[in-house]
Amino acid sequence: MSETLINKVAQSGLLTLDLAELYPEAKILGFDLKPFLFMEMILKEKDFREQLKAHDWSVYAGAHVAVHCSADAIIPVWAYMLVATYLQPVALSVRMGLPDELRKTLLLHAIDKLPIESYADQRIVVKGCGDIAVGEDAYLAITAKLAPVAKSIMYGEPCSTVPIYKRKA
Image 1 (tube, one colour):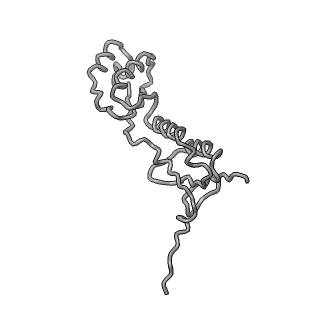
Image 2: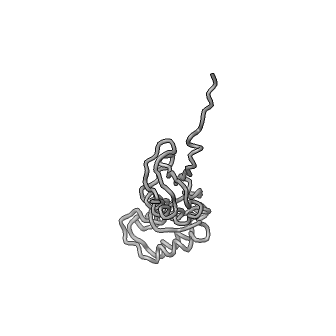
Image 3: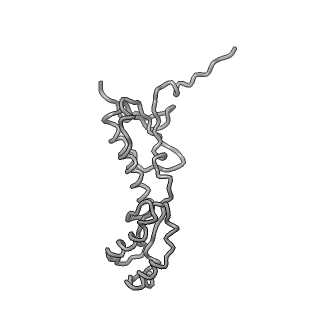
């Protein structure tokens, strides 16, 4: 006796959204000011400017760059501004903070830019696990963005979801 397997998940009309796919494909690199400081503690303007001029900025080409200082030092605002002038021509974007913070910021920005029209009246499953960890802030942001237009929002995998939101009729 031959039985036909039916993929009920495929027939369910669910739209799966994987937030990890919204991460930028470009590299995210950090630029630490610490090695550019005298004794890794003090910023000497002349030395700092010379080191920045001599630095190979091409390594940041096509990358998103997070600028920070890992030393417990007082860095004047103009120093960050000067670094930005070197990074701006080569980097895709330049932001203050650590690479992980920049990754989070870029993901939230991608969520903000999502065209919600394509999710109107849809039953959406926001994928819950994968190879890339997605922070709670992204799940919060996507739910807030889609709730006004979605028919329903679920969390997890299409075969095993947790209901999050259902529009009242």
